[in-house]
Image 1 (tube, rainbow, N blue to C red):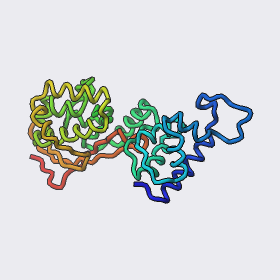
Image 2: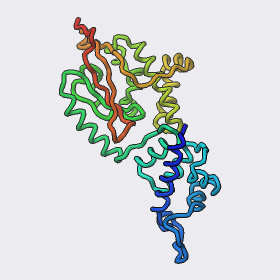
Image 3: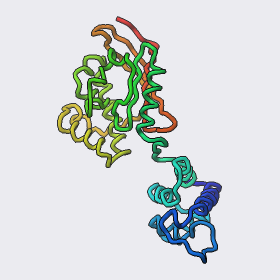
Image 4: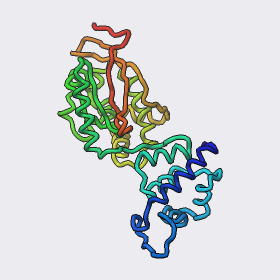
Length: 270
């Protein structure tokens, strides 16, 4: 919930962003008789699909509660940067529900791949996934602990699909059932964040059609977030190693997750 100070700052912020946008930038004709700088309040309101009165209340710091969708519509009209859009959400809602990549996905993926290679020199696996679970970068060690991701493509390179559907997962993950249930819970959280994303929808549709365990566990409605946790591996078919998974996100794209593996306190080599 926005405080009175935040509402006042929101009002000032909207005015300054409105004043820097020219009519030409949003497809409106320029008039020689226009005496104000930037756009009028009613112009912003109409372009954003709002009533002029309601938008005026925002600029007057009234105690009203815009939805995230309304804020994103205003951000589009005012041509806000991603940093400015998040600031708008923070002022109006007290939090940011969704973040978007600042750089193009191809650039982010290239940077993540470079980072994985530089940071992945330790004898432990390191991989990165995108928002849908697709593995987009990995170090060479992953081949011995997980799989050779370079030989997989499409949905088979998705970490959720691999964990639930690839026989290698059951062989290499010692406590496979626990890890698989955890990833199903994280997939439920994912489905709420991206309900209309085609890649997420395809993943859910195929798991419902092809994975017996997924069909059995999904109705439990367990929800899990990305948290630090332990995972035990069967390496080289016999040695059992316990790793602590720690996830981090690049600042430029919170939808990319890098999974570091650190030796657990009870790591044992059998």
